[in-house]
Image (cartoon, rainbow, N blue to C red):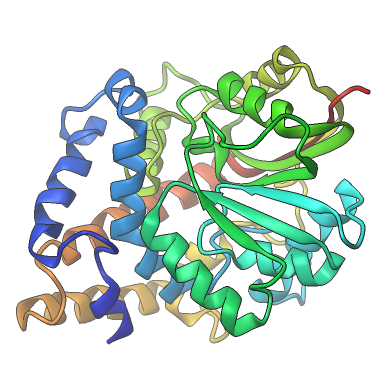
Length: 336
């Protein structure tokens, strides 16, 4: 019932179907193109997260990201460790001011704030996610030290040299231009301090002339609100162009003991992450269909469920073929 009542986020329930149709039109499967998505990225990404956030929270919990995972480790354990790893790489110290770029509803923000005893500001351009995040901060008891700011990460409302550390977890992939986004992060970061991120990227194995590869890329883009998916090399180039010194970088999906896409794989079953399995997703899909039919969920909800399912299939195929990674990690420093 929480899933049904929150579907559509801040969009009026009677306008959800129209929003779905507009969102779909941005993407290649519905006649859209990359240039239009980049030009209208704010509208596209906002519509996506208004439509998809309640599904994300229902399936993943408060942290909307994948994780490097060891054998014997649960998905939730790996997600927390993935966040702790980021905080340790940044060397966050108690009392420091940290910026989470594209923070979602603040799951990583709260985990990192408690882990490092720091003050974290979450930057997000989606009003519904911020409203939800503030409530979760209050319930977690971090509302006095952590906050949210509604703004576009291409035009941050912060003075230069404001933060002791900046991170982004699978978020700056929504930027229409990596250089423009990284340049803003560089501007608000204090000299001598670091920026770390997990980026969604196409790998060197991706062949732009391969129709199957392009289809997988398109499925991920429509299912995850992306204007484009950059190559790992393009991220590196943009970092250096923005002025950063890259300390180290690696695709953490390579040689991972457990494939990152396993929770979405239809051949995998797990009680601990049941809602993400093929059976769990089938039940959710049909539950949404019934809720929409009896008008407890807004019209268009089933179509949101469908393009999220399309994304899951694209992510698994991209992971298996090793042409896509959701965890290209880098640690970069702003020179003194």
